[in-house]
Image (tube, rainbow, N blue to C red):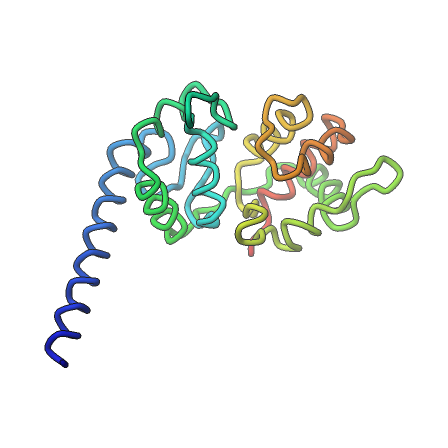
Length: 203
């Protein structure tokens, strides 16, 4: 009996190792050009995905892929093509791989803008219907697994671009339209401020 359980354990470990090797291989061959091999992109147009929540990464990969002849929930000329040949298992593996990498965080470059962003992040703006970002993404921007992504240390330019896309309806894969509802009340200055503050946050 012990020998049988030992064989099963060995098989499980070997399978896990093979899955990890496959994920690393896909990351190196498909993802590294834009996100770097460890997920720490050096170009602000491409998000840092190292240390991002696995559930969030898996959802985004699924949303970028077309299913049953329908358009992807999240459209991107680059990402739609990149995920086209990935299986659900591949996406799960990649999400786990990048979630396990250590983020090399971006930084806030404009102190005054970050100060304004801090006020919005922590307290929102009730006059204009903007809730506090911390309510969903956490005080330090760590996010909430399976619900809201980690934003701490993310490129300010990328965060601002996504908020703008939500506001303009160009991105609509947010759960129950939450981000579209929030961003609809934000002006360009508020978007830049929140994004700048998020870049300087550390979980």
